Length: 306
Ligand SMILES: Cc1ncc(COP(=O)(O)O)c(C=O)c1O
Image 1 (cartoon, rainbow, N blue to C red):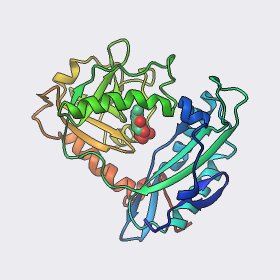
Image 2 (image 1 turned 180 degrees about the vertical axis):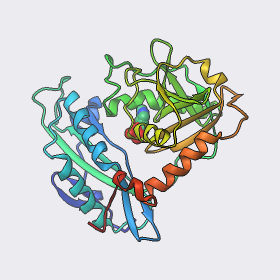
Image 3 (image 1 turned 180 degrees about the horizontal axis):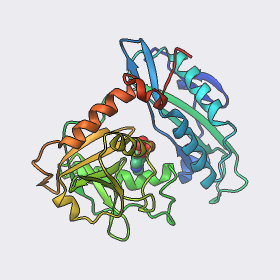
Image 4 (image 1 turned 90 degrees about the vertical axis):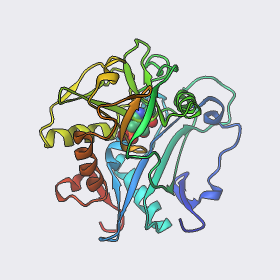
C-alpha cells in the first residue's frame, strides 16, 4: 500500500489517518453499522486489478442498510465509481480487501434507529489468503448462530460480529482453524464468516437462506460454477451429523475464498483431503476472481481500464 493510504469518507477521498469517528458515535456504542467485505485481485499479466462481484456486494450493503434504517445516499453505480477512484488513488498493484461501512453517525445516547443521522466511509488494505485454502480443520461451535429475529442474520450488521468473533475465537483457542455454527433449531447454519457446502452422494448441498445464514455472494458464485460443471446442487437443511458422513465439505466467502475442510470435530471428511468437486470449484473460482476466465468476466470489474 502506498503511504499515506487514501480512504473515501464523508463524500470525498481523504487520507485514511483522517477518516475518524468520535467515541460518542452511535455505531461505536451500539454496533449500529452495516458493512461489506469485497476483494480485489491483481492480475500480473494484464497489470489490472479486478474487483469481484462489486455490484452484488453494494446491493447487499443497501439491503443491510435498509434493515437498520441507515440512509445510504449513493446508488450501486455511484458506490462502484467511488470504489474505483479510491483504489486508483492508492495505486494498488496487489490483492486488496475493501471495507465499506454505513453507520449511525450521531453522537447520541439513544437506543434506537429512527431519527439518527447516517454516515458512510470505506477503505482498502492489501490482503492475501486469510485462512489456508488447502485444507482446514473445523469444529462445531457451542455458540449458536444469531437468529434472524434477534439480530437480522441476512444483514451484515457490525454488532452481529460479536457472535462470529466468539465462535471463531473459541475454535482457534481449541486448536481448530474455524467454527461451524448451528442455527437455534440445531441445523447447520454456516461458519463464523463464510457459508458451508457439503457433498453427499455426489450432490452439492448448502443450507437455505432461511437457515440464519448471511446470503453469501461467493455462495451464489459456487452454485453457479457447480451447475456449469454439471454438479447437481441441492439447497436444503443440513443435520450436524451429516457433516460427519459427508464426502466433501468446503467453506466459501470473500475472506476465506474457497477453503476445503478436511476434518470436522476431528473426524476426517471423506479421505481427509480436499475432494474432486472442491478442487474443481477451487480451480474455477481462483481463475474467475483474477479475471483469467473469459467466460466469467461479468463477475469482475477492472479498476484501471474502463
Ligand atoms: C457471517 C458470514 N457468512 C458468510 C459470509 C460469506 O459472504 P460473502 O461470500 O458474501 O463474502 C461472510 C463474509 O462476508 C460472513 O461474514
